[in-house]
Amino acid sequence: DQQVKQNSPSLSVQEGRISILNCDYTNSMFDYFLWYKKYPAEGPTFLISISSIKDKNEDGRFTVFLNKSAKHLSLHIVPSQPGDSAVYFCAARGGGKLIFGQGTTLQVKP
Amino acid sequence: GAVVSQHPSWVICKSGTSVKIECRSLDFQATTMFWYRQFPKQSLMLMATSNEGSKATYEQGVEKDKFLINHASLTLSTLTVTSAHPEDSSFYICSARDETRGISQPQHFGDGTRLSIL
Image (tube, rainbow over the protein chains, first blue to last red):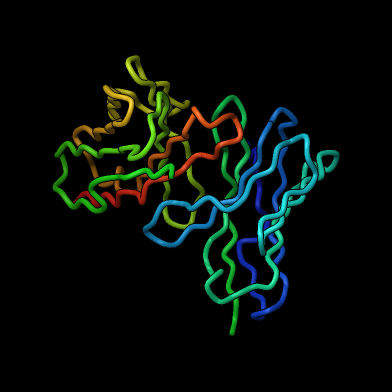
């Protein structure tokens, strides 16, 4: 029973363009949503989060949108840079615990 | 701030060996730490929640006698994989959150431990 889903295993975009990573969830009791970036053989690095009572949070090139009615969130990266190439995980917090999606591998081409 | 350190980063050992992994919060105290496991190209799966001064809480399907967790201080949690076998080979990652800075604080992760059992 996958409570957090990232349906796109990979995404390729051109440098300078927008990257949009998507995430769906099933549990309406999640109170926080987070995005992490991960390189192979390293731990995830926190990028940005959003409370369930908000619909948008922006931090520099990163913006997270939350659509509670659709149980959907997305991460926008603009402009995308080659250094953004990594695996991106969305995570939802419920009961103090994080539930992770399967991850999306983003490749930003120069 | 909110740095989590994990050691060792890589372990190769023979089947039947017990392996201890340490997770430290370097610049904050954590009453709760979390242990995750990640198989290749898969998601991070929560194994257990480590509670300072009390027993860990294990997720369904995780053997507590196999994965011993000790959280003896506010800055250190250890995971011991007992009598490890090849199927225990995986990437183990810990995380912690600076709870003193409010509910919005994210979990920060260590760099993980690659465990390979021969």
